[in-house]
Image 1 (cartoon, rainbow, N blue to C red):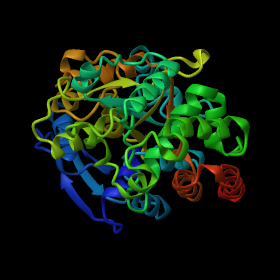
Image 2: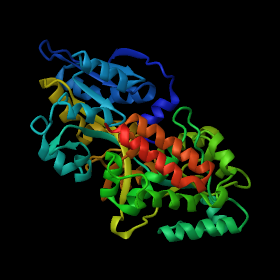
Image 3: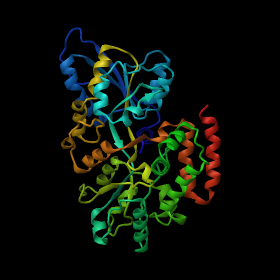
Image 4: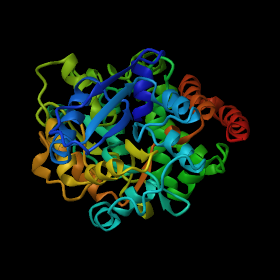
Length: 430
């Protein structure tokens, strides 16, 4: 799931804001302070504070951390009032990108060590933070999408092989269906964000099938939803779902009514009600919450969604927390340079739940084999594109999620659904 949608789906609509001073510092009278605004709370906030502590101890700079459940709204208010934080970390780059285009964010090209950044980050990650040739955003912790989860014991019992091509995936789902079991579990309910898990399928298919140029145009609103490329993504996903959703456990009723965190757990029923589930790495916490005895690798594992078009092999949709500088201070420069290092990123990596985009982060730092494998996929990604709907205007994003639900409800209405999306696109980007 894209990070901003997960936040909106899991928390109440009203913003809850509090301020905390991160960790202890070794005070030096003139070290100064820095204000940070982010969306991390609970264990994530504790991990971020752990990242900050070595830097605070070394520099003596005091960090004033402010957290908001509705980061976009609070940041927009602060910037509009002329009272932005020094740095902000957003679970979606859209708001930060918009501020950059308005000249509200500081270009980083001469503020951070670009030589180090280029040496330790793939160009794709640098490109994601670049607008009109200037770097405005950096990434410290990220996630890779398009992971197909399965129970290895179920595969072994049926002598199923992990597919390494799109055709072999289609062959596998046919084999599973032929055995009398539905191949897939899909769950789309997520409150006001219902539909986003299906939109993740579409993003992955668009990128792998039609490539980065089409994907970028789709994000920017120049690639029509009725275009052959976007329509093909829907029809390809329709082949996964099957006629009348016959490839999915429980059909449309289950998909529309079941919360995204609960759908994949039916792989672990005895006998299994499905064999595969598409979701990002965070889903493992839902697996183990539902069935505490589950162990990674033994009871659940994943393979990346196979490539569709050879020309775009190695393409992945990614998500992550992006950083931007709103005030150019020596403290802000120092922290931004620290956060792009492997040393900083490794601290959170070891605590679990995050992947580092820095190629110097040791794979041994990851706390479990599956997170380590996710990191290997991410580092090897040849074409990385940020979550598409996260970057679309709010009206377009909401319409895209609704379109997913409408398509699942009746695949025969695809042309009408796409035409409606074109209409939203025509006004949402103005």
